[in-house]
Amino acid sequence: MAEQPGSSPQRPERKPVLLRLDPVVHEALARWAADDLRSLNAHIEVLLRDSLKRAGRTPKNAGPLPKRGRPSAS
Image (cartoon, rainbow, N blue to C red; front, side, top):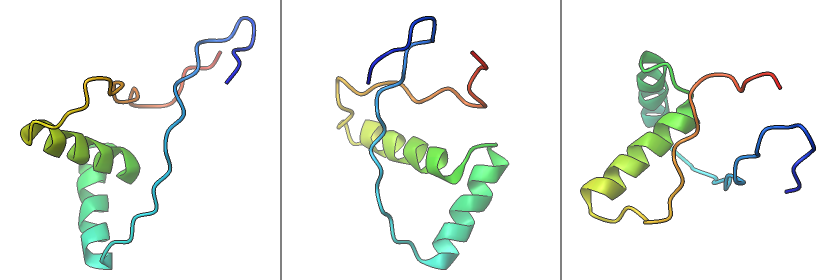
């Protein structure tokens, strides 16, 4: 990913994942995400990272979670 002159550094590419969920589980996660002011995708990543941490399996080279909110206008 080439950086344009005068632009901010690009985030590393995110990996897309197809996830099939029971509709009731999806709705519960979507409500929880909305309560925490996150997208469903961001909330699922938070939950997965928390599970990895509790299991002692956090990858040493895992990047930080993307910043919350809209990207800054550059």
